[in-house]
Length: 124
Image 1 (cartoon, one colour):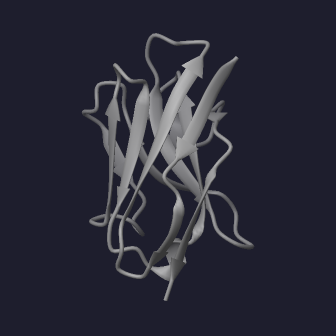
Image 2 (cartoon, rainbow, N blue to C red; image 1 turned 90 degrees about the vertical axis):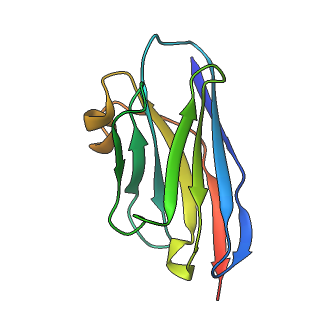
Image 3 (cartoon, one colour; image 1 turned 180 degrees about the vertical axis):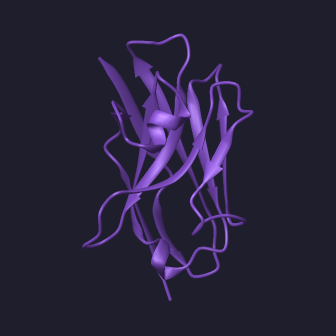
């Protein structure tokens, strides 16, 4: 079994910043894409950002471009999401995901492995 554990969520005022982390443990894979999704109140889960194994392919949802930055540390099996200029509409549960088939399938939510999620609340 593979485990993904997110951390770093919390309550922040609009305009503030948070850094999410997600560590992978348990069953290991040689290569995998990593990414983040979120699910706001009453909304469907949506893609936020993804990063390839080598880090040379990065994608962002339009809603977070220029504000969020995804990165990874393969030695630590950890992916990060630096979130700046947070707005109330960013309020959601943020989920970490990995996909052994690559970023394309991760973004399409095909055969992703998931974490339990971490709550991010942005107050106005």
